[in-house]
Length: 257
Ligand SMILES: [Cu+2]
View (cartoon, protein in one colour):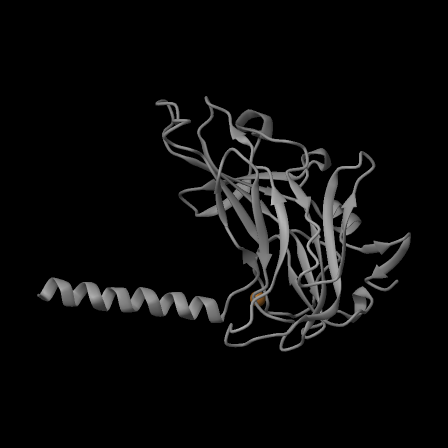
């Protein structure tokens, strides 16, 4: 009997924790953790507006291996991600552009893919229509569709997880970069990357992350691995500054020049 009571209160705590997290949720992925292998149809879920304002559009930069993103490894003793000499080829076989834009006009009537000189997807934008209103209680959700092709973990590596960081801006008012402030845009930028996309003095932080997990039964870690390594793929400041702007028919639509 005691045991049952204990489990029930534990359940209550877990549920409460879940609810509290929902209320304060930042942007996230509909399926935030996927297994290596086949294409995963996914979506970015809006957590809140800019302050309490309606989101009128968003701009996203996709991690793309042709653009030399930074690779970091998790240090188990200090609990932080650190630079590594390892290269992505050593641990993970992936297409150069694992993220793709999906045409889905259900939330925003306009949108498009951003490509690099090799015509690979390096980002996307959406906008127009009525937008996504802020909901402090989390009662309103909205999302934008994204396709993702997970890679395959190299069998003799100790890598067990790769986290992709997606720089993203939710736009509530269209301004120049110098007009950025809380209530105008919400930023989801990689930690520690010094980009043009900042709100001076803002306390809003948080990364938008999609995690690929190794299939530890079908693709076992070598026995020589002391521990499972966790890596993070982070677009560079150059990549973010180059691909964050939204250009429509050759004209820069956001941020204003
Ligand atoms: Cu947030």
